[in-house]
Image 1 (cartoon, rainbow, N blue to C red):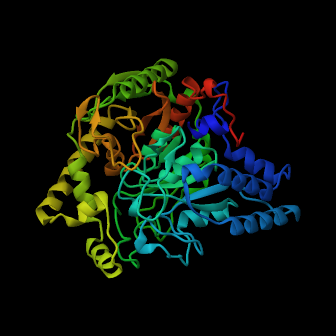
Image 2 (image 1 turned 90 degrees about the vertical axis):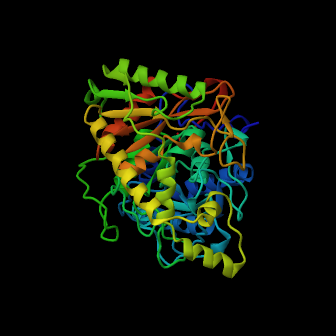
Image 3 (image 1 turned 120 degrees about the horizontal axis):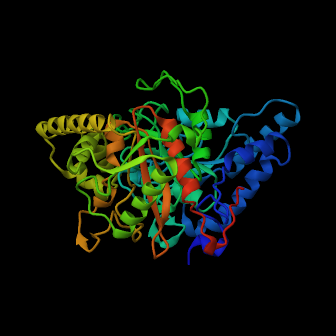
Length: 495
């Protein structure tokens, strides 16, 4: 039994008739106009969390008292005639890798089980300034090292479509919370696909903006905390939502430079809104089913190519089967992550506390890395970036599957086989690192479901800084291939 069936929560963010719904703007509009109150929205949010999250384990820390206090304060301001922000009363989940002032932030690790930050991450600051209501922290793998939702501190996050399957990760709880309708917006971080991968497995929209578009401070790289200083050249922050329109609204709040992030960029976008489809007509699309190296589940391949072809037909775009022409980036990605990990700090802190680290993180720390390996990874990344740049000079968008397979069993790092062939445990994530190597904007949008009822995601990657173009193509995909499943008779709780 899945949560969507049992509780009539539509994981698609679409109505039964197939129209993509923007959930965030109607909530904020209703709160601003006093058709409802922020307190009522927050109370309904916690009612739903208490009803469903005992199965899902999307949230690891809740802040019911703080959220209700913030909601009541907002309602009082609105009643007094004060203006309210663009996310007025919108309940939000924040990934447990992002700092929240006064609210426990564990990084999914027993090493920081009782850590309470004294400042907000810059993106949390911006959410609060826009009058969003932070309701709690969402579960993640330990320090984000793994595209799954289990760690040694909290219960494993489950997939709302099938509770015996993973929700992906490392923004595991954020994706599950949005897919199950616990919140309409959650924040994720993405150093190697950690927004897009769980979005695909949970049937929602996950947007990784261009590098620097959303500032990162301190993010997952707080040098004051041993072990929490990593992935600087790869990490992005972005929204997990139910539609491209919701992603655009979230970016209107999150995007823009901040002096605390040395690579943050000026916001040259006048208005964060999904562009009309007419602006996409005639654009050149490349579809790659495997990027030239991946083993892909046949149902994933068929669903994603079908949506790519339908997009081309509907928008008058050419669709070529093509890819940039580099090999498997997995070893390069692993070396770059190792280079940007505070390995000594983690090992020392784990020894001091008598805590055992697990999985990919433990293997990464145990390996003896050499300077030559790091140097080779640096140049391999540059070759991949250059090859992609030359490729994107010919194409406006690169479309691929987001993941090489649908959701797999809980408490695994990856499936041992794909399409009947034995694969490395991380083979299923092979499409994601390209977006982090290059910093190009990328989104995962729902492309359909397998015969077993599990979502499939299509990844759309755009040219340098073309975030709006990517969101526009994502919105077109929602219209062309609506993901609403009439068989579920589902009702979007945020419509």
